[in-house]
Length: 77
Image (cartoon, rainbow, N blue to C red; front, side, top):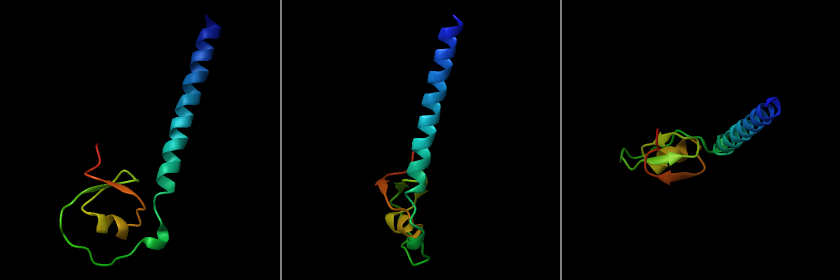
């Protein structure tokens, strides 16, 4: 019984660590510091969900924040 618990615990820890490392890589590669600017954007509300998990009011605002990829629509909470 102790062996089954140990195997289950090891499997759980391995899966948890691999999921965390995937999420960390996704967010670190999605912001381009060189693209961050304070240029003008319209105030049109056309929300996009950035690869960093934040909702931006429109694609221009996402680009201005240095976000490299996004999808149309607000991010899910």
